Image 1 (tube, helix red, strand yellow):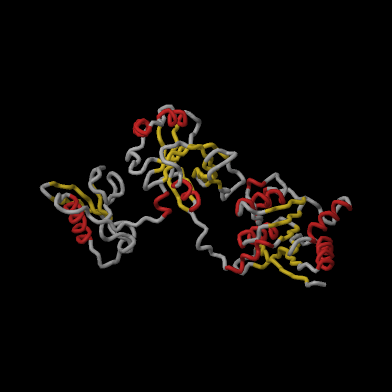
Image 2 (tube, one colour; image 1 turned 180 degrees about the vertical axis):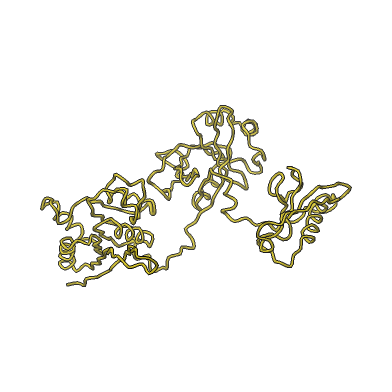
Length: 412
């Protein structure tokens, strides 16, 4: 249901409509202009609905359509009263809401923020960033300020695999100088001309997909200039921090442990990823198999891994979770037709681990892992996936059930 109405405020008439959506009264009515125009600072775009006193976040069913219209009147009349302050906003956006409209994003750590704010005013500097495309967004991570051989500041990016390192530029504006409200080539060149660095910015803008950090008293802004028309694009800044980790403090001890995982299939891949998320930073992966499309049913890997060795692909996955992981890959068929020397060298590597995990469901492999565990008093955990057919109570058909059977051997 919908109704048209007019609001007259300060001798100005506003044609509006109120719409009662499908899930009313669980959701609030929508009030918006009948034409595609912008009437208010509290509006979702041109022609969009007005953000009123009752919204989805504070809606209750005692609010009537008439009360929504009264709220629209207070908003429009309040914004047009010249002797009053701006109508206060109760709108609070989450980080995700703010970033929805931006596919260009720069991650700013506390260390990077401090380094950018410490840059000398008015003096352009070189820098570097790591960049990758993922989940429909271009993500940039500052990794250096200053020349490569003697940087003023440097930091390892969160991700190392799949990222591309690019040169960048930095300019810290003098105190009291602010960035133009509307960023264009002309407005930035005008500002740089006043600061005597116009030639520097022109050269930076001529690069392919340039990265330029502009810093004033209130903002660290990353821009790029693209296209024949040299349009300026802003990156949304996302401040990140390691504070407030979700793992208990006792998990810190896992960082010093080395885990050997024999078998990187449906069980081993999931165990490895879970351990990496829990704080383990050193792995030995043993598996000679290659990832095939059929493995996508249960393996932690995805279609990017098809055609690669499971152990190498799992290494890539672990480094995507934690860039400071140390992973040794051994594509050995343990207990298979391999040289005795190669087998022995891998068993020796396993003996230096804090924990052995056999995820092969192969008794020969289990015996070799148990031999290492017994000789060096290293804990061994094993698990397998068992496929069974269970009767379907609703039909004569049967369904496949997958169960994981864990086990553990002691110290012999």
